[in-house]
Length: 273
Image 1 (cartoon, one colour):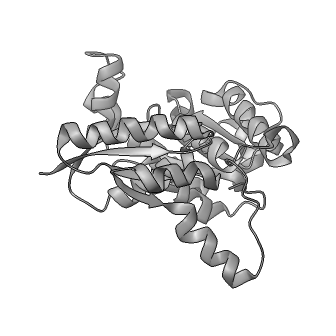
Image 2 (cartoon, rainbow, N blue to C red; image 1 turned 180 degrees about the horizontal axis):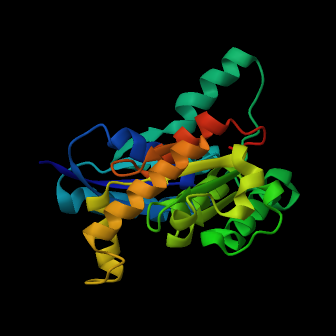
């Protein structure tokens, strides 16, 4: 299996370059070594980046792959003229053709986060993160009417990471509640959630996988026993079916896949990208 060093060069945070680059690299069966070079926003820093890239090329005997989202044309020119790697200029590939097609110039701003202090979307995202942290694991029943989605499921079924992903990536206020033995005894949802049934989405998981996850946290406990995991999953799924709650199994799904399914189901009016 081949191995290459991959550089992500940006005059901002580099998040766009890395996200896009990783999506492309995922199509190839190879091992990669990632090097991030953010805030490359001067000609001097561009020359430093070139020296590092060229040294890697000489040492490894293969061209590094270089993804860049440099906006400053003078900085980009340094890489174009001196870089010994395979340079993939993502803005040049996509922004310039769009400028020609639309007949307008792009902003040529550095990074997604350049004017965050003036951005309502940014503040909404921060508010959503704070809401999700405050309503993690059933910590609070306050202001649930403001929630965009309320996740329910047994402990360790993926509720917390999914809630935070929805908040951080899409600005959604996501609360989450664990279903516990008291709920199974009553055979009903937690009372605080009943008025907000339309916002509830359930997460389940295969009992074997749940037992593995719980055993990492509390080995040799009843909490992690396969018998208890089977009982909790069975009761939770039965409860969700009785309550008419949409749900999915997280067993083989990534957080991104879980969140995307939830977005398709609840179709929130407020969504940040």
